[in-house]
Image 1: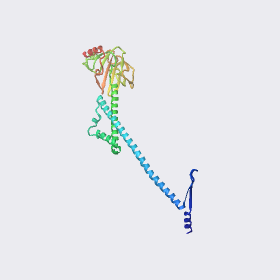
Image 2: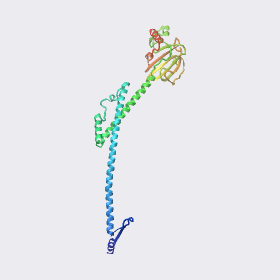
Image 3: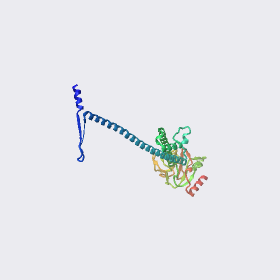
Image 4: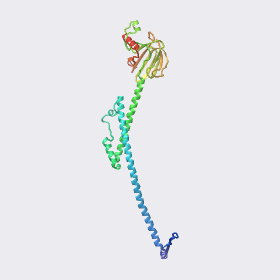
Length: 326
């Protein structure tokens, strides 16, 4: 009872609040009980907390609204960039087809066939996406974004694979060009052509004839002999019938043989390039005079070297005609 009475007396005590302004105004004085003062303090604290909560909710709302606007602007920018990327891929696709036409390559879409699964947005889908983004980007479904992005990725991979294939084809054709004999192995006059002939040696021995597997080009001894294409020397030494000979492997099943040389300037295993001097003309082996026996073999079978040689002058043409008449 004493505690309750003491608490009641404490709450009923008076407190005085005095506000002293500047000298131009009179002091303000307010008096109340301790219980009323505590009530006002609790009430003020409650109002402050409630006002802070309401203000916080409004601030969050405005921040979220601003973030949404920024997000929509980014979505619109992203959509524009996707359209630019699609236009660039369309140009790349057209360039790809033009390059394949020029190179004589089949289109990858034709090679894949009609049963291959394909996908991606059509022109109508792209127009629809532009309209949706122009009205409200937020109305575009997430699946539409995924479909557009996946289509761009797939198209980019297809173009990359196609250009890699074109690059490989060009590189392979370039290597084939360097590996294909395309120049005269030496200077001189053609004395015997590819094909059936009656050689001077066989004629003296009374034999019928032979199939000449190359072209004979005659000139003065020690005339320079050149490699007619890039390749690797497989043989540089004495060979029955050919005398001192050189065999060069050019790859792609193509090889060349240079026979009856007087001296070889390369060894087996050496890499040679088109136009490199590899030997001197001689008369080693079965030969009646200084000349070069030049062969071209494809997949091990001799082919007519004249297919790869070009007539350089009237003298060559005359020598060609004389050799053909023998």
